[in-house]
Image 1 (cartoon, rainbow, N blue to C red):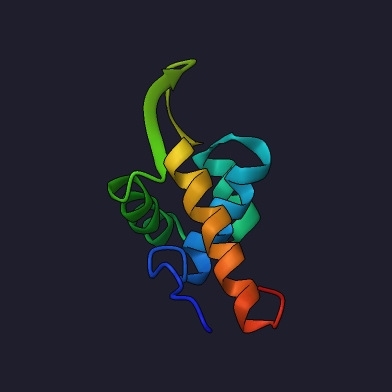
Image 2: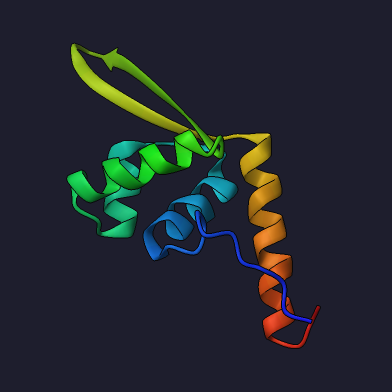
Length: 95
């Protein structure tokens, strides 16, 4: 009856990052940090976990001589997020 929830997405901060990226497709690290109220260190760790899972791509570049990190949701990430939401709905009696 109850479906397993993806442990990668079942972390509050990783779920928040994915929720943001689902809506905007890609975002700068500073934007994500601001929206989630996470520390830079914690956010970096959680972004790395999402990247290792294949849910996001991380692009590091320079903009006006300043380092810039852009996170971009992948097709695999979108599919995993949609499956997570569908599985969560079984807990709410909607699946």
